[in-house]
Amino acid sequence: MEDYFYSCKIKLEYNKKSYLKLLDMYFRPEEFFESIEKGLFEKIFPKHPDYIPSHKQIEKTRDFLTWNGWVFRGHCNSTWKLQTKFERLCFNKNFGRDLFELENGMIREFRRRIQKYDPQLASVDERDIYMLLSNMQHYGCATRFLDVSFSFFVALFFACGYLELSAPDEKPVADKKPDETPKFSIYCINRMWLEKTYKQKLPDELKKFYEHDEFGKSVETQEAVWNYIKNYKLNNPNSDCKNIFKSVINMTPFYINPRLDRQKGSFLMPTNPYVPFEENLKSLIKPNSDEKYRILKIDVEYDNATLIYIQKFLDEMNINHAVLFNDVEGICNQINFKTRLPNDALTLPKEKKQSF
Image (cartoon, rainbow, N blue to C red):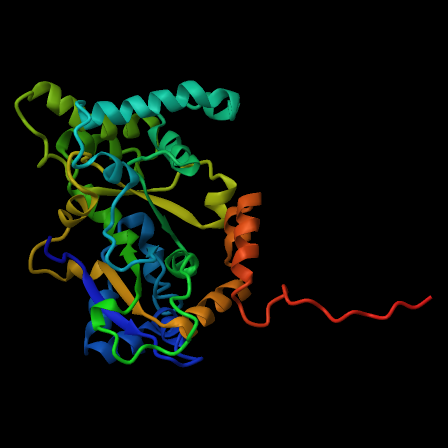
């Protein structure tokens, strides 16, 4: 698929301060992007973004925090595409069932079995699709939701917090081929643009729901959006539905579980389950426009030394396994993680002489 986003690469060379380039991208975006291409900053962050009326105040924050209104996602391998778990589970596999029927069957099975583990979830309105899917995603089900975060640094953690050192020697291999150099990536998506654009793509039958429900949070709106393609297929049985209502919705459930809260999490949901997530997202980009700059893919080339410094920096900011997951498994992963960090608390203290 042809790139529908803007992509650039950051090379973190063997240097203790090299990781600061990533901080420059976030805290000094104008200098960072202008150093890549003149005028690039204004393409990515236009002076007068056309936000929807209720988000007009966001425009005033541009000089304070440029990334306000964006969401982020980290990949520890830069070759990975934007794919949901449901897409990875079902696409190119012959289940002998319609994907929409399969998806709804998974939701029904979750509702049937969750009561013994989480009685409150069992009482959720069956039409509250977003609440059900967000919790299914939380517990590991393959859903149509794609995890994103409002925090650049949380996304950076998921991009490099699980990476292992490639070799005992911290220095890069001189004869390593470019395509063999390890890279992780961070996707940056303008949430405000996304919300404005997907509403322009709504079928006429759905627009009426947003007249009194601007953010599409009511169960009536959710149900209408979720079932639109199913109803279309019932009325058009010979259609494969692959070109119907392709879009992506940014969604944060009303009730936020502790993990979602700690990770400043949110979700992106493709409206058409019959095509890949990226095809849904690409459909929002107008050809020959600057809209591709609303989706950025930052590939980060690193070596062992820079990886350790980034991981240490995130840990110092308290962005780590134990905090983001807040369970026994997260604590154990953090204990393992700390063994690689320099000058960390796991080093044994000197024995103190006992006094009586």
